[in-house]
Length: 248
Length: 201
Image 1: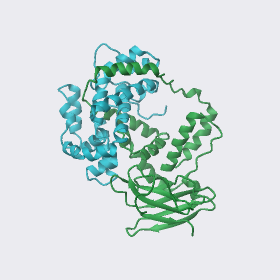
Image 2: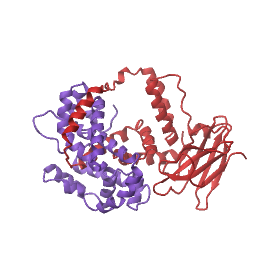
Image 3: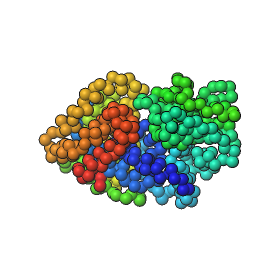
Image 4: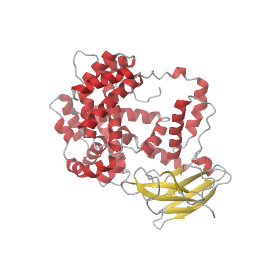
């Protein structure tokens, strides 16, 4: 794909290597960056080297209490060390089948979250062949029945919601959107036909973002964006800064 | 695999006792095979360094002990995943401990901690505790010299992120930087540190 936005997105993600190396990403950014790391050898090498640098910074030696040693040594008695990662034991066919899935995933937060979910599933069902490929924002944007509702703000920023009823999914794309205030985050909501707002994920700290909403949007009547405390809320605690009516 | 720039394999980091004991990388590899004595030796050689970091991030001594214990149990469990081609053993362990410490401070008590320690953090920003704590050892002097090479913003951003456990977005707010700038300063600063100290190249 020759999406001109991809290059900017790549450099944006790439620039998170330092913050990632010192654990200074929030959960969403971390998931997104780890998705990127799985495909970017350059970033993996950089993160490794920056972690070395950070570790050197800590020169305070503090002897833990002696009892801690006993607890640790007792604790390991109950823990089996993980086996080494032996790439040879992964069937080649599985690798080949998996690779395009990783490659084709856009670097969107939502996709990264789906990956996290898949990874969790994979622990339970390793290399399960029937696992459906995760729905991506691109698939929604390119769906035959995609509809869009746009909103322009006075400050020149814009946001558009794309919904595909057949895919049962919605995507929000922002342009020049002011970032949420410190300690706050933009949270996405899907309104049910009953009028309830269901949490649909958080926006990344990025003025230009494309995010696949969590949840089934096949009969949602609206998409809302509210400002919530970091980490999001279960229910909207503020009036939506943006509300997109999907019923028209 | 396809790493571009392998780190100096097993380069010992500051503060690892240079006694007759095997180096941490060897002890880790033995631990991966279930060697408890090797793990005990690894603990003895590194616990104070690991705990020093955890305590600095977590602050509360009781919680710091829990986190240090969790970190060492995780180190035992995942020892086989340590890859000497990717970096030193101690920094691998410090990475695990740091992640656990940060997860701890960001969990349940995160909001109250931020409220109560913002002032404290702010007051210590200019106060280079890293350099203070560094004793007269050659290694500590190298670290202090390298830290001194950073710009004020790089140093403050790295300290708030690494020792404060703040996200880059929070660091930007604490330092009145435009959002998106702090992550760049953290990265620039770490690259400069890396190149000055000469690790992980």
